[in-house]
Amino acid sequence: MKRASYPSLEGRTVFISGGASGIGAEMVRAFAAQGSRVGFFDFDDKAGQALEAEVQGDVAFGFCDLRDIEALQDAFTAMAGRLGPATVLVNNAARDDRHDWRKVTPDYWDERMATNLRHMFFAIQAVAPGMIEAGGGSIINMGSSSWWEAGGEMPAYTTGKAAVHGLTRTMARDLGEHRIRVNAIVPGWVMTERQKELWVTDEAIAGRRAKQCLPDLIDPVYVANMALFLASDDSAMCTASDFRIEAGSI
Image (cartoon, helix red, strand yellow):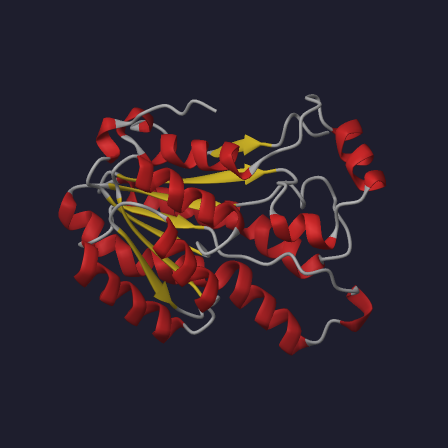
């Protein structure tokens, strides 16, 4: 696939959470190819180090369990010391583990919120002062089509992802006066290696194609391409919005 080039991304510092694999790893590669300085965070140390070694450019991996907010803050501070303050943040980290609503405990629910939602706000809180000082920035929160498709078997995940839209719009309002844009990417079913290993079957793929307007499956590269656009100056007047990459799912 031929990818657009965004001159405004060259030399720009980008932080990506959950960047060691899947959609996040594709974003790391995409931003590095644009000449950005890319700091990415994950609790998969082995995968993170492997990706850092693989990708050419100014790329740095920071080990971090984003459920630990103090660790998140420390990791972001350390990465800013290496690459400079971020003017692009991609809140990507999440896990769509299936769970039976009958068996959900308060502790499990809280852990799912910490995994899929809470860290997004505190990542914004960590980078926003630097963006204000720089005169602007772009924050991209990863949503999901699962909640509005009424997807089942993961109520804590879909609840957290639905809340991403509220977070996106309210922070767009609070940070807009500083020329910081806040948007959400809303992907459909993206064919990452994790999805293929755990949930992709012939029957599931047939059902997905029946829901989509387009017949092709969604590769992580399409999500990364949208992130590049939203991070660039080309999207300067885009904020408080959802950008769907779900092949017209109904």
